[in-house]
Figure (cartoon, rainbow, N blue to C red):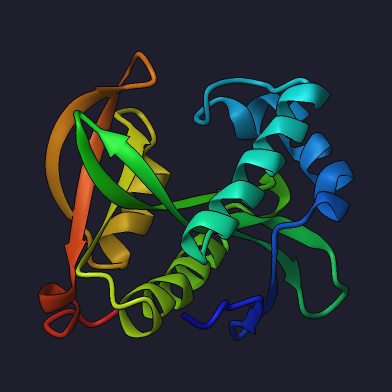
Length: 178
């Protein structure tokens, strides 16, 4: 399987998450506003372990998270990607994304997600992808809906109530991105 190390979207460049991104992720993971929907602020050591776990994921599965930068000035925007996750005893592939607050509300999460889903379905030949968000995160729910995800159910994940959305390869062909 071909590893997708880098790619672009109309406004962003993406590169595979590496240890060299530690300082940028430290700053992001210390931001209370960003981390309010991602399990809370992370210590520097927790961020380092987050990166190491994601590097291991890349080794195991050939995909994972990418770091995204603005094409105009190369500024760090956030992270997003696909990762294997266990949900109630079932193996799933999750679309995960997080942006720094400066870039919220500009359609960038949708832009990132669209290209990542294209990689997932067309390159990795995934049959379906899930997405999770806290029940209170309306902005993330809107991103999922724009990407064509359908509400599946409410679950407890990481000890908190979450909404689980699902997107199948067959539904991709019947959906037009907003």
